[in-house]
Length: 321
Image (cartoon, rainbow, N blue to C red):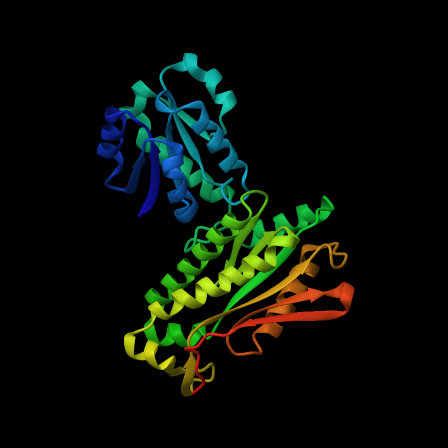
């Protein structure tokens, strides 16, 4: 069920919205933008409904900052206005559509459906993680390269995910994919609140873009947090052993370690890239090198020094069968 955030302090408004929308949508109601921010950052809802009359100017400023973030620019916002005379307010807010308060009963379902469907057509999102997909990722990289921006790109991939998926099933595998996406998104935002980007290539592959001086520390935090949380997705017996018995890619049964995460990093400050494919290729190569070792690890392309830095963070419960 699609999630809709309602930002209003008017009981009449959210009572009416619940009446017409709760059958088809999961509604989350907040009185202020600061209260809603944590939920939006961790969940990325399909729509935000903004009651202009009960919204302070500081909340509008926060919303505009949120919409300027590449990760949340695709979040559609539907504004509720008191009457057509308040159209001037729309010049100060980044919203996709509006509805007049006295027309809520007649039009709210139609407007909500239009906003969500329009956003799905315009922006490619991974349906599982709600993170931008391949087209948005490629566009982000190319625009930064064309603008001669100094930035770093990290390519993250899960190790031994397929054996986990085969043993525990797609439903539990999907939860690992979603939690990993949220973890990366939250830690990237925590370290660099502006001009970052997190995308989901598909499957268990992700990318994130940050300032070069921040991406290494963030990768370390991602690895530590991932290694702490991933054992909780295993049954107790498998978690205690640190291994599972599952099929490999050839259909043969063997032992596999607990899922780990491998990250490859490159940057526009290290070498000249003209096309996004060149940059993602180098990051992917660094990621592939990191997957050669057991455990969570990141490798950094350091073209200027003609070396590749390897950093491995060991996990005690990884065992090879």
